[in-house]
Length: 566
Image (tube, rainbow, N blue to C red; front, side, top):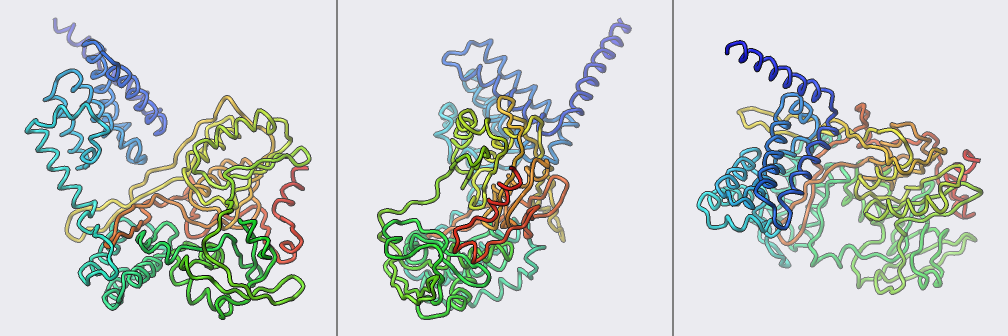
């Protein structure tokens, strides 16, 4: 009998050793995929219309095994460098609660919810019960009510609901101080780029206290708050006016300007009716409302721009925000034509009915070279559009140019879904870290390293011809994540100007009076740790815009890419 026990121990030991060795050979993304696949297999069982007891039992066993897998030492070590893998257990417990509920095992379902809360104190799903109708059958259970109450209290602490007061023309001093204090604390405990900001944040808070209480209107108060967050020098850390004030500050006529060689020019016009009045690319702006354009921008625009780099600030100051103001207040501009004639025009900021913005995606073939422009990564249909174009045209080309110079971001995954059609191998994406707080006397925050991501090739589509990506200072956020992955895998050259130098995951929150704010809570680098936030991604070949090219309608960066791909 003793021999049999020893044999059993030996067998079990060898099995668990084998599993541990197998787990040690998994990457964090592979472990994540395995956990997600297990969840999917289990959910397929309990989500059936009428699952059998055997199917419910099997789904619960799968989820239990998944928790054991996630709690194993090799996977826990991987999860320390991958936030998304670490968060899988929270979702598994939620799946388990629903599976138990379907099986009629209410006590076990509530225990799963309690275990989920114990992992992080998460308030989810207090406000999301409608998303999980199965759990409503637990609503009258005392233990369930107790855990929901804990979640609500936790939520009220961290979601700052008490600060979300309604708009009025002039907030109380208490509301004004509360709003500034919330901005200060959210940055202190979440902001990841203080090294780049280079300021004493506590002293800045003290300096701004008298400024907010001195304001006489909510509009002026928010201007002070916007200036306060601009001190952090981060493009993903911003304050936004309440909706009630949006028309007073965010309206602008449908054309864009740019600082080129120290002078400001019209570069894009999005309204045919405005174009017909003579507002066309190539016009130089001399004065705005009687002030020299540079002076106007420095005084009225620059102090309120949250920007990560000089090139990012320049775009915000002279392109995005230069002409913003009240929708019912026209703007007077003195222009100079290419022939040197001075023309003064009063231009409405609103009321245009023929505005045409940049298309999400555009494509054309130029001398057997594909030219693909992607102006955002917000549209989930971008990958399908690419696949359709690939079959019809891109596959036949001898090279491809991808232009993301006007791409302000969106979802990084959409961009990676384009890159995975340009390779037959897995590729690495940005590495990231965020702040972790320790609650002990004298403790300072430490960085939690999430490691780099990995993305698999598409396998169905592989464009193996040369590729060039055009970038510039408007290339921002998720478009920079795209650029990092493309650059790190050495798939092709980057041409243009340095990118905006700002990406990350903002933490959003509400402010008194109906405004909103966000603070950057995740710091990204290249997979090998190379910095680009606060710097920008430099092109392999720099091509700067010139006045001569603008007046002649020449896109020098595009022409350089076409030349290289001939």
